[in-house]
Length: 73
Image 1 (cartoon, rainbow, N blue to C red):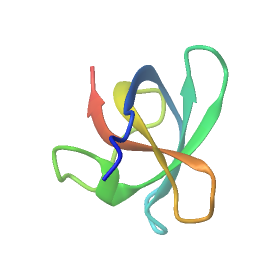
Image 2 (image 1 turned 180 degrees about the vertical axis):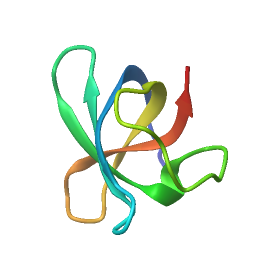
Image 3 (image 1 turned 45 degrees about the vertical axis):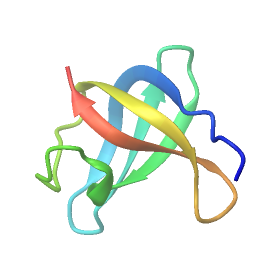
């Protein structure tokens, strides 16, 4: 099985819809990556907009890159 390259990045939570459990992280270089609340590493299922975070970039379910293993800084 080929190794999967995991890219660790930093950014800020740009938006988060608590009812839907969906949000967007804006990376330090300006890219926007979606995420689901289950991707928050501490299991809290919620995160405030404007929170600086560290995360891993992974292939998403719809063929787009997503943020995962999100950790508030």
